[in-house]
Length: 314
Image (cartoon, rainbow, N blue to C red; front, side, top):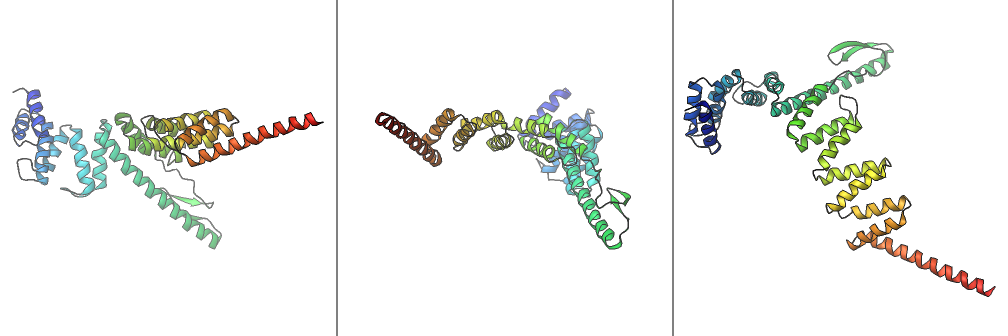
């Protein structure tokens, strides 16, 4: 049987958790396809037609990884990170993740990004603690002291060390993962990192671009976030766009908010239309507002009639 047919048949059977899949992968390995060891590793790891054997699975993952299987490298990274079947080692996990990530394996890019972000957080905490100790010594002794700046020893001459710890590699990996998968959770996290400038220069435009990509796919929570952001910034047209999207998505408060925006902008006619829409949706505030507006209108008409009557008298 040709290699392509062997692999296709084996994968189809493995997907159904059929024990007979093993023979096709074993034959593929015999014919020189060491990457097929990845699928044999899966069979032994999860006990598909054989007794589960994690140690055997690790051996097979390792053979597949040496043959260039990025999926095997990713699995070895996961096992090294958790300490299952192998000695727990963050550095080993990073090594496997990085090899697969460099070959554009998205899952490895994500896991490596997560590790690097945690390392960044820990480095920032160490730096902050060093700053606090340094400030205390300076205040007590009125002299410069030495403390850690990242991983380098520096003389502190001021009360705060300017951080040079970068989170750029982490950001780049998240971006590659998002570009490849369009994963919503990762996209939102990346947007947040740009929004707060976590280890990188703040980039509001990039954050908005990422948030927008999620909102356009129907995430009402992010629609609301963007609408409020633009409203606070005075970007009324952008705010209206997202509030209108929320209205179209069935948000019960959107129509009333749109009415308020138009009223604040001095467009009472358009505001009244939206107040009526909100009132028809049983919005209490909108109903109350319409009654107030009707009362003012009635008072205006009565006032105009009284004025005409007074003019006739005199």
